[in-house]
Length: 252
Image (cartoon, rainbow, N blue to C red):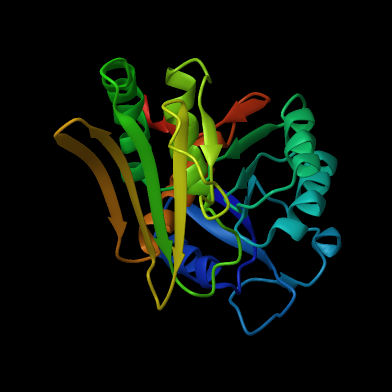
């Protein structure tokens, strides 16, 4: 039985993860951390440093501001940690890199298997299509409560393309101040916020007289929660290092 500490258990994603784990015979949530606590079947804490429950792994699905303390706690307890939170600062990303030298850290901007499959496919498509002069655009749409823009997933997809193209492309987030033609060496990224959209991402390869589009729609938060639980199982018992969804994809 894998014992999980759930950081952000009382948030929208945290609640979905808790529900999935409650039905999974292979794992159990032994403690929950959140700034607002409510009745739960496990011990809850406002401050993660007050948690003294024995555990095997931490799942973080909270806010960017909370991640540094989660990393510090994981280092102190020598626990693997799954970071699902996006919009992280450069300082936090550097902290994660350093922590991965001591503990296993699983980090992905999107925990969906579908998105990570698309990331793999578009990296292959980019190599072929860029040589034929295709322009690359990424659009993402999310609910009106999402704070960061563009989404971490949009950046993940852009990075997948750019890495396949030797990182020769720049990212353009806003064309309103640009009075010039589109550069062939850029990836446009557009964010839309509205209503209750769970998550929609499109990667568009636009060439002369033809368009190829890779699209992913998430219709519920459960797809991300399932991936987070898979990640917790995967990273438990692993040696120190950085892991992501592509590591899981290789096992499927």
